[in-house]
Amino acid sequence: MGNKKILIFHTSVGLGHKSMAENIAAQLIEAGLEVKLADIGHVQQGGFSKVVVAVHQFINRRLPFIWAWLYFWGHYVIYPFRVFIARFNSRKLKKLILEYQPDLIISTQTTSSAVVSYLKRAGVYNKLFGIAFSDYHLHPYWLYSQADFYLANIVEQKSEMIQRGIPADKIFVCGMTLKSKLAVDVNSIKQKLNIKPEEQVILVGSGSLGTGFKEQLLHQLSKIANTKVLVVCGKNEQYKKYLEEKFVHTNILPLGYYSPMGELYAVADIFFTKPGGLTVAESLQYNLPIIITHILPGQEQLNLDYLLAKGLVEQVSDSVIEQIALADVRKQSLQTNPNVQPIINPSTNVKTAVLGFLA
Image (cartoon, rainbow, N blue to C red; front, top):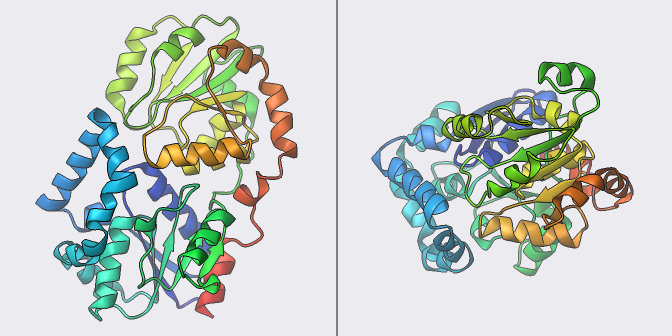
């Protein structure tokens, strides 16, 4: 099995897809497989891909309602032609596949899924092809007849795929593929971040694009005594600098891209964020209460609906202080919530599923 080669495609537009690819890779490497990661945006770098990324980011930042329409309805226009369209963005990816000669390709995002589907249809690639999800719902655009198997996150995805005619033996429910939980020295991390032992730690995620994030929340949190507010801005350095100037000499501590995030999950008492699939799962791994403050219309609205129904998150309310005061109660509730373990510690993981399919 050790001579099997796995090629995993992802995109860096939204860090969740990339992180999911890295987490899957870690499990497969642990199983003794040779794994190569590739960002399709870098592989296919050129004028076409740059325009697509720029338009996507502009819509998400400035016109999120258009993205919501595209997500819920617009895909039906492109759906019948998506594999055909992918042929015009396949040349460099084809070259990589022919050079690496993988036994299995896994895609964590639909752009690369479409290109690999085209190459399978054209006979360029004729070995195994799997598709991994990173959200708490199913979108038909993620599904391709050329896929040999799917790595789903929740049983509801499998049920819906079966209803759509996909054989059950091609679907593995693996929860969210996460890195191993860190053993964190909480006191050491607090000292590093200049957090006093008696301070309650509030973690805030603005999102890499900042779309929908309401700064008013930070003004509320800045007035709460005996707290330290850690604001993770991701790779949005401009927003980080803005917050540093805006909230100078307050309890607000803006952070840029922080790694490993497990350190922040471990020291935090409560987390205000948006419902990104991987972010929520990582937080649940640390039994961290989650308050949803904003969403990107489309996939995150559907994620939120699922997470609320399962009692895994709460929406931000006018009584933010009360929600913070109930953080310990919320932690206890998560410890007994039966919906947590299937997401963070499923009975079938990616390593088991892939090894079984390769056997």
